[in-house]
Image (tube, rainbow, N blue to C red):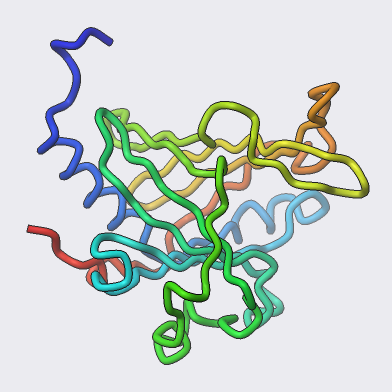
Length: 207
């Protein structure tokens, strides 16, 4: 892309707000799970907006849960959205005692107990999103340095996400740091979610 065609700072800021509003919701892959229950479990991905004061900007709490056990998420995180040049940069944080905040995506009283002191930054694991028409395409930041140990093997995260106003498609894989062969993650293709409930009205308005 030439420098003359780069989006303006105002456009990137507008895109950030659009991405935040599209992210904010309860997403379910129930159709995918029903069509192919052997390969896909029924999963919910929740993104719940945080108050402006948390990051002095736009932040999200997320959790992923199996539909049969909504109070026991297998993944939780905090995300800070930042407008950056021609892209949207999302910092990722882990919760030090995540179990204390299970259910925050559905119970705002629990969500309010999360403070910045509860977090640890996941360095080299940020996501980078760019708008492509009616969708945003995202991937983990370059460098292959988002390291995750699985079954005694050191892997790096390879993550792809596609977001529209009503859908979320994601594919996470762990690749061996030496051989670059896949160690964990779906071998059947991406998870395909549809938004069941929107939390867009909870996204702080940035003037």
